[in-house]
Image 1 (cartoon, rainbow over the protein chains, first blue to last red):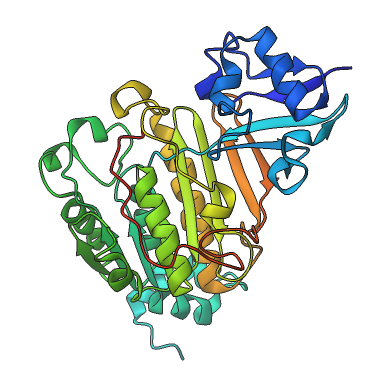
Image 2: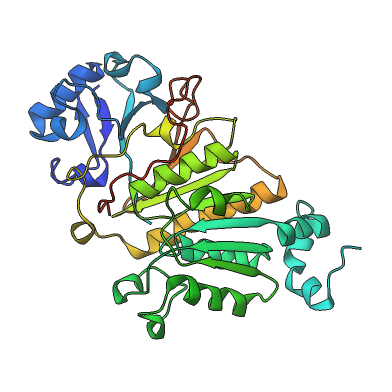
Length: 91
Length: 266
């Protein structure tokens, strides 16, 4: 069983319009690398040059914001639900 | 008992019938003061329902005039309003719906010079603005003044809403510490938004305002509501107060309002 990752609409161009994609786990850092190998370009939209998550993008593992856990070192295992949620500003 | 006129008793009868509202709750609504930042996609449905509910004083701040491109979602404005200030167009519709409501208009950009002075007169602030600089500014002003802030934002087919209560849960900067730098987000012209999305999120914001005024139910605090219109799916994730938050944390570094360089974000 792989890890399901929810992709927000602005990034779905990179995933062939898929809203949910599968990735392999370990921690969020390796999960992002796994996403990058399947969907090139996605990692730089989510993290800065040092690999830190951009500060207007949140990643939730089973509803918990990883910034309040172990950041990109947060462990993820098969069956976990990972959501990528960017700040949006339209009104 | 609550000094309602015959017409008001009829107008608000469906509220008064609810045990959770009653005459007392309706009186609270009639005495409440709510500020709406933005009178566009989110502000339109929120303002319309709050006026219908009899919220006594509704402030509208928006510098824009109505454009044809607004009419696909900004339901307070009509074709003959194109070219007119949004706050004036909105005020006319709201007062036609409910003359009980006092609508206070500010045809201006909210900024560091006027925000505190405007917000201080209101009980609750609804953010329906269309750019990040305004959202951070309004957040900081609400933190400084201890005002509840009901956030709503929309983009393409996605919507988000949450309620920030002073001293009780996170603020907007706890949720998203920094705005995206200019250039990393699509421009106003490229992005687009599905019109009906504004209605869903704007009405969620109005629902939160009404509940806060009445003091009923559970506010959408410490939760971010995420709406995906394509899947017609609502989800919530947990939000937390950040002790390191630069504005509401233990050692705040932001002590006055900041005017970020304006950039196009939607």
